[in-house]
Structures are given as C-alpha cells and as structure tokens.
Image 1 (tube, rainbow, N blue to C red):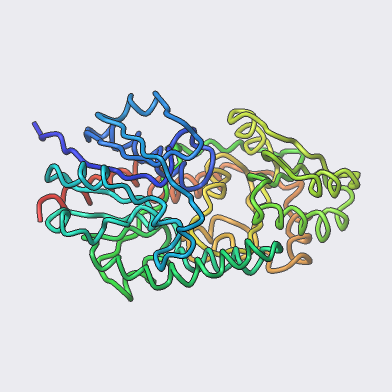
Image 2 (image 1 turned 90 degrees about the vertical axis):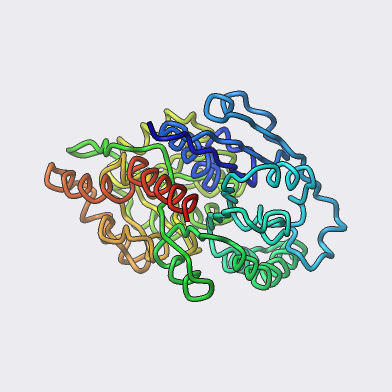
Length: 379
C-alpha cells in the first residue's frame, strides 16, 4: 500500500466558499488532493471570511491566522500583500516536521527563504505574474490614492519576485507564465487551475441569450460590462443579452437599465449561475488584463455552448482553439451575429470534450499535482 503523503498548504485566504478566482483554485485542489489520498495540513489567513468547518472534511488540521493590514505595512520594502501575511506561529508549525509545503501565491511567501525551512521541499503556486497584474490594476484605477498604492505595490512585487529562487518548484497557471518564470528561475511547470469540473456538460442545440458573467464589484469586470454595454449591445438590437454577477455598483445598474435588449441578474446562487452559463447560446467573455487563467472561461467551456472572447481572455492559456475570438467591438459583434442562431452540435461537443478532459479537468490536474508532490518528496 502506498503510504499517505502529508503536505502543508499555506493559503492567502480562507478557501471557502469557492466564489472567486484564486480561492476556487485552492479549494478544489485541496478537495482533489484529499480524494487522491493526501493528508493536508491547511494554514489560511482570515480577514473576513471566518472559520469554515467544511474544510475539516478534507484537511487533517486547519489553522487560521489573522491578517494585519495596518497602514504601517505600506511603508515596508516588502509588498503589502506579503508582509501582512507574516506570522511567527505559521513559521513554527511549518518548521516542526519534514513535510513538503505548498505556498499558494507570492502573497504567502514571506517565509520561503527562512533558514528554518532550508531543507524543506517548497512548492509555490503562482496564480499570476503579480507585478504585471497589480500594474494593470493600477493603470485602470481612477481613484488616485488607490492607483498610487497599486503602482507602488507593483514595483515592490517585481523586486520581491526573486524570492522564488528559494522554491523547490514553481507551478504556473498558464504556458505563458510558465515561460516567464522558467526564464528567470528555472524549475517551473504548468498546471492549469482547479475548478471542480471533470466532465464537459455542454448542451447541444441553441440557447436564447448571450451571457456575460463575473463578480461585478471587481473593477476589471465592471470595465468589461461597460465596454459590452456601450460598444456591443446597442449594435445588436435583435440579440438578447444578460449580465450576471454579484454586487454590481450603481453605475452598472444604470447603464444596463437603459438598454432594451439587456437584463441584469444580480447575486445569483452558484447553481443559478451554472444554469445561466449552461443554457446560454453564447458566453461572451471580455477582459483587459491578460494575466493568469480566468476560471470563468474554464467554467464556460465545460458547461456552455459557444464562447466568444477577446484576445486578452485566452492569451497564453492553451484554450485559444476552444473559443471564437474577436479582436475589437466590430469583430465581436459580427461573431455574435454569426453564432447566435447556430446549433452547437455533437461534433463540436466531442472536440471540446477531448481537449478539456485530457488537459484541463480536475482529474488531469490533480494527477499532475500528485506526481509533483511525490517526485519532489523523493528527490
């Protein structure tokens, strides 16, 4: 019998409920590794989500650490997202045994170069090239104070990234980011995000609406909604659009309310959102930040019919061939017109099933994580 492999996982946030990008990846990785036979000691920073008893179903132990966000940390040379996750008790617990450690994100890497962990196997999951992500957030932010913080944080993260030299392995979220980290630090592999899907459940036939979905309180997604509402929806008066997501701000509500062929669906449950995605004719996914792997794209490909995207949504992800791309508003409008009445058939379903099941299902990705831990543990 293969002995149970025990690992530490250090999460930047409490990974439940799995309701946004990075947390979705962490939660379903924990669940998948548990089902694969791993014993997991979970460490997570709590700053508002609270203790979640469901995590005890998958983890041998769950430790919670408070995250201090005192203003003094903004004056540190260490990035704010890193130094605010410093905790000596975390270090003591990680150093108490020989088990490998998975650090979820650069956020959790304060102790990566610690002498107490010198002989540890240390794997870092990079959810983004963080300095690029924060730089893009800063450029699009309109609040001057927050803009300044984000741009300074981007500079700090660029310098701090060198701490990855102390990792045993770096795990990137896209092929593009694998190349970035390999060129600087080597020892990088690509494993797509975990997302809870193992089977492609797309419906054949046609749907009756075009759907954009996302957390509408996030500026990146709000910008996408405004772009769609101003440059696409008015040009296609005979197409029904739905914008779905949680916590839209008043400007989003006002913009959508003026459009006759567009509805806003707010704060849907997980099951309601999954049904919206599955029953749409087209999942329209737009982003202006080509960083990381957008989990809503994977979700739409596993559940929905046609996926129409702009280049930034799929750039460097390995999912380009699964989507129909429009480079600008004119091309996106034409593509939506072309596919709005087209039947999603079994041939298209089979192509998607073959590609996604082999490369992007949780079964496939957890097998890669399992192999990585076992090979890392034995080297």
